[in-house]
Length: 371
Ligand SMILES: Cc1cc2nc3c(=O)[nH]c(=O)nc-3n(C[C@H](O)[C@H](O)[C@H](O)COP(=O)(O)OP(=O)(O)OC[C@H]3O[C@@H](n4cnc5c(N)ncnc54)[C@H](O)[C@@H]3O)c2cc1C
Image 1 (cartoon, rainbow, N blue to C red):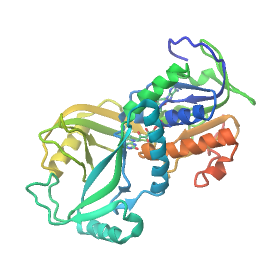
Image 2: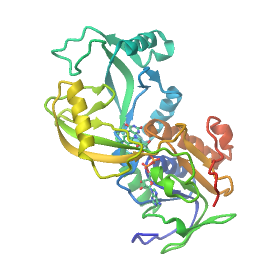
Image 3: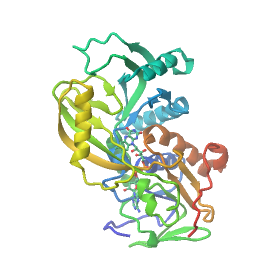
């Protein structure tokens, strides 16, 4: 264990959670509220996904204008949880945003028109504006129209992590440290951590995001992590709505004309140093598809915990009955983590089987080689 904290009070916990990104934060929130004694350990890695994320919840994605599978149910639970957090911390972490989507070609226009006729798309896919006044529109080259997408949201992930972190600290339930794997001992009936102070728990849940690829118990899980870059930019004029042309622009403040511009996807290069060519890629894309001019104010790079089959990695280690993984939330954590954190907590507090709670997921982890 590396770090300098001194820890007091408890030495035995119901659960140790490794990681205080969105996954560990929502899980700690649910579990503590369900009466579990929790210790969270987090090393605040600068490339962790939650610190970099723009926090967009977007019902409609992809070339085919697809509704995210399970969106209505996910959003329902997410709204309830963000509302509970707002009440507790006196801050709205979830805010609705209007979204304008550039329709890029006749094929995509056909999909959009088809979606307009489908009842399940009615809450999300609204009018296609085809007579675009190019003098007033911020999106350029809109000859195939601009779609109006409803029920998009933005989560202030940084504020949320900070509030939950402070709340955990008040309860002496957060260690700011890197947990070294050699300090963890997985026994038959408990888990022990030997650090400056020895602690034990009935169970350990790893919520390490992309860093799980180094976890000796989980390293063979089917991660296919994706590096991503987001810029904070100063615009020459304010945009009232989120603009989406494949990349996107998300206004953060009308007063300062600042916005987030993102995001890139790279599967091979995992270097976390901000790369100027990627920043240029985003600015060029903005200037090609909009009438806006932008100056970069900040550049953040992080790694999404994405998976080969795009499924979450939630479940129990096949050999160690007290070792769990809660990970694999890819690029949609703000939408899906609140839902799965609630279900996962029900498994612990009501002893409901994970396979019943989330039948869409293989809840016995397929780790192949076992430590
Ligand atoms: C560029 C980019 C843009 C994104 N945009 C969006 C978006 O708009 N909307 C959306 O929903 N999602 C977005 N995402 C994805 C979103 O960030 C993830 O789905 C989500 O944050 C994953 O959270 P996590 O807690 O699983 O992982 P992480 O955020 O990586 O958190 C893991 C935590 O565990 C800690 N940790 C790991 N190992 C250890 C250890 N050994 N000891 C102690 N601590 C440890 C890390 O420091 C970290 O704090 C984006 C991601 C990126 C990179």
